[in-house]
Length: 321
Image (tube, rainbow, N blue to C red):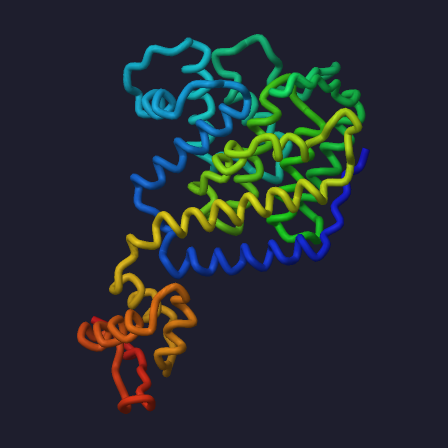
């Protein structure tokens, strides 16, 4: 059963908006988050992905377990959180284009739980959704064929990587290659793929955005009819990524100071620019703030001022000490 994706106007719109947000993230240095922010975001990702599995341990207890604090919680919940942390802590250990690596992730998640196979399943599995809906998986032979096609697509397909990551997320839940952990792995594998082009995604808790409206999420995943068209899900996930980037910008933008903006602009290495050029890069500051930044840039040696009034331009010195 081959999956398809037919990008349309909505897909193109979302890709454009995401590209703009990624530019803003880079401009505000959010692709280099502080260690404390990275830890909090990773906790959000792990808590959300497990909560979507009906593992209803609250975020505080999840955080305490991750930080190795003493917590009163079911032993299985503690094991699951630690196992999930194991893969989220070391994503570079896995190759998102390798089926063998996919199996290693499942093996790592199953440590301490010997009741399931870590390799691809041989029989049928039943998926139990939070709505009470139960779905029977496709036969294992078709699953293996589908997984081979999926990884060929990931390696050689022409679609942008961000679309491939969404299709992969859907496909792992469609084919259900393992007896358990398919949902967690599908979300983690999307992050691995996104990290190949956008390292920020290691610390972007987009799973948290799914959790706030999980009914929309499950309504777009494979149902009883095993829909092979992934387009609706791809658009949904692009919207989730756009929301996650927007929320990151909103929560962190106030922490970015004038010197941060000035350093970023200096590193662009422009020969000559004016205030309008500065504001094209830093789109969310006022004219007055831009003027203050430029004056501070001159005072601190990042910029050299030329001309006066509306003829004022700036340049960056060849060497900044």
